[in-house]
Image (cartoon, rainbow, N blue to C red; front, side, top):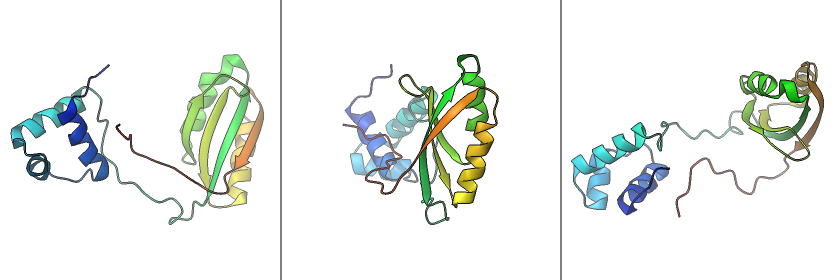
Length: 150
């Protein structure tokens, strides 16, 4: 486990709010040297704390306003294979291996009921998928993309 000190947390907090901030800007805001900011960010990248930098895109603006949560009942011998196939589909935003009522839970986005129906039919046609349980999300109270530090 990687231990974050207060300076690391403050740097990550700033990058969480805007990943495009320059090291120089962070250095000035936190009143620490540019070299220290650069070395700490590079260390956190090497250690895998920071995996990359991406824009946060609003899927609804692009027409993907159907968010669904799907539970899958999968034959045990096929779980990993099926999860890997589903994870490659661009509709799937998250695929989880779970315990409990469902062997896997996935979160996916669609532009229409037709897209959702095609996706579910494709998943159900996979050898090893016994059944699915689909829930359409009506309202989103929180959908945070960043790791919030506390």
